[in-house]
Image (cartoon, rainbow, N blue to C red):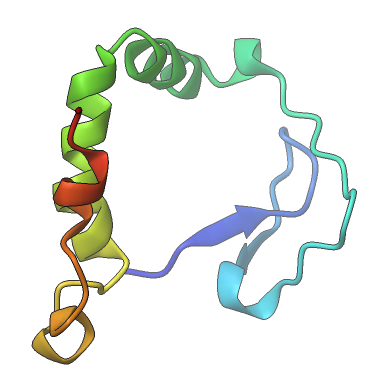
Length: 87
């Protein structure tokens, strides 16, 4: 699966593979959430999640998505879940 970014207008999109793009410092993004109802709903759902659910997702799915669970990276490094534990 290739992640693409629309570099054209919303009504006439121009899709470019994300790996071919560079985001410059202070580059603005002007999406209209009203034109992207699915994205707006996802943002609200994520923002409404309890903090402990977000912490657990970061400590499990997040580190896996970043490739931080392979044996060579984890050996000798404390698990992220220990860093996120309370008290």
